[in-house]
Image (cartoon, rainbow, N blue to C red):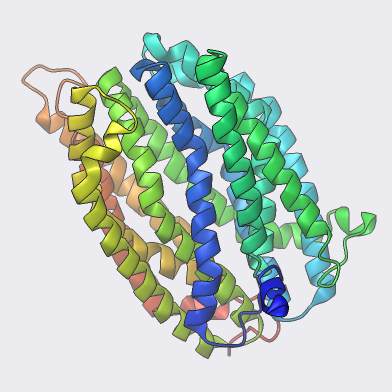
Length: 468
């Protein structure tokens, strides 16, 4: 029994055993961890919304797209490192795995310092460019600047936990995240409700908690000496590994950048509707974060599973696992959609008691509900292609669904709903979410087509994984 328990905290080899069982064992702690991570921003919103008010809630929401845009560098590094780690681990190439991890640790530090310097400098110009309402402008800027100054904790957690997941370890990142999450909740209540620090208190609670989780992940990784060896020599980035990291990670980073940039453009449209719409949008995005967690979880699990099996040259197991992942993703999404439709009002009441905000938020959630099923398909199949080393396809699909579809549809529908002679923001806010739903469905269709074409099968970086 003790042996079985201790094995939960070891790296998981997904090249053997039942694909479905591997995915479930890996996904459950990952799902819990993703939901706990979502609590960071959700608790901020709940505490601020209840103890400060709807304006403060809107301020946090208005800052979200900007944070996401400047975090894409981490996303790119994380995906590239996870793919490389999983494939080298599956192929049992210890030296290449060691160089990959050393390069990742250094790249994370450099990228963190870059955002800590650049982020605060661009905060005020960007928020002004977005026409952020004056009643929330300063609070939004204060929140953003503090988050940027403490970004190193978030960077190390997100990137190093990605490496750990690439090695099959989804348990320890969960443990560290739960510890940090409880700390975040306690600090939120203390700083915001107790010390009356407002949105700045929520930001400080977040970065302190993230710093703890990032440090714990780094310590955990450095202690896995039975799998790889990190020395001062391996910490010095090698050009071949940097190029491979960039080649695999850049498309995913650009995908997130494109999505975040589109969110910023749509945020400008959202801001034109006023504080109530911004507040409702903030709450819906918090609920959306939880609704998306299973999709992101199965997508990440498929990336690790595919990476290890493609690295070992097991295409047959990869395809079998893709079917299992798709069944699990769709099943969970259907259940979540039902829960959202039934309990949407009660979810809104957790954040605010303003009737207008609650009614608008319910309408938004009902619009998006079916889209979560489409996103299950997108995330699972994209995870397979990323794990195989094909990170370009998701980037092109993202460009099409956000730049070509979502943004024009949002502005176009809003224009059509304006009263005669009306200005931007005088129409109905429904196009904000109709456009998102349309882009999700289009993404699922395009991703399915790309998966069935099968070009991803020839993208492995190890010799055993290369297909004829």
